Image 1: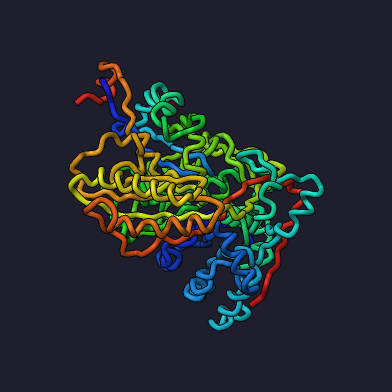
Image 2: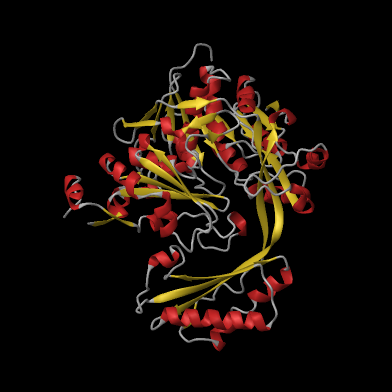
Length: 458
Length: 115
């Protein structure tokens, strides 16, 4: 590891929990890479994992990660590919232990170290914070946390790259974190390899933007790409993105040779603006990146060079992701066919609403959409053709009373024999009642949080 | 002449809570000034009337020949609270591309936009 390397390849193998299962395998097998980053956590995921851990103290992490490690660890060890993953969920130690067991079974004892990053879970500390005047107000609404305190299910700080860097410096080959930022999983290997200083804001911003570009997997390499979408080749075999980073903070976005999809200036631009807020300040725990400084340049087939990135000092706060129970919802659907499909679906909606009214059911919201006419673009879709082949009626309800939502789910099927004709599409049975777990974003002073790093020998 | 945005730009949208973001990217660099001039926050707010209940903010990214719009209070509460098919605002991108703008004939010709 002595002597700085001039080029580091970080590959994305998972853009969200539920992404293509074989993508990480194809990243490892398809050509040279140095690091594999895997993003498993969405905001809601943490509360699901919290419930799993409450049932079984050995659970509460992304379980898909363990069989994946079984499949790729031998190749990773043979080719010195290191892995950064936020697969640890609310239980990184249990996740790491499961990976250690798998590694031993594979005969990798003595050849692998697993880094564990914790300290993000603040669920047990909330009352202490509130008592000391740390309000954890909702960043979007300004509301006090006290308004949902008794319904909170999980609370995690978004940790940045630094604890992952520490794990890599201590020799970890696989780093398992809890709630770490997606971008930190890519930035950390670059800080580690290139010895970037903790206040080298331009380079930290560059590594952060590299992370932002690849963190959604194939969404920067041809997937969900509007630009000339019909000309994008072989999405069945879509190549996931790889960043080839240089010590000066410039990098190239590419993918393995022989894969489908396309890495182009337009495909990278689409991903850059995805979920963007104020482009002058993309705030992470590591720095504030300025998206208005990014320069892109085509650099050969499926290669885009990125340079010019500027950043500013990180803020004094971590973002906190808190989840809380927020009532119940259910969505019911039926399909109405030609002729007068839209009119029939509208009539069915009126009948359904009259019945809900007569039953005295109260909801915070009832939403009707007509799929095929207006579900995605609303009134912007304009007048529907009277000749539509079919329209799906889609009615959703939400409210605090589980029984009312449950009762709603029993009013969909009766419409088939008691409403407008030409109706079908109820093969799935009654809609399911879902508990809503809502998301509460807040800020906390960094001084309150102490990330912890452990390294486990296999 | 009236020109639909589909001839001038591509876009991607996403969500942050109850706010939808739409990134609008010029198909050719020379179209960007036209987007800056015509696709104002007010114009977008008007376009999304009945859908966007809050304010519309606009940010310019001349380096990417792109504009970023934030459409507040647009996703039925956002995230898991929303009952919408498109709770994540993924199709706000194409909804914005339904907008048509007025371009003086001469300018349209100079940009190669007249048929």
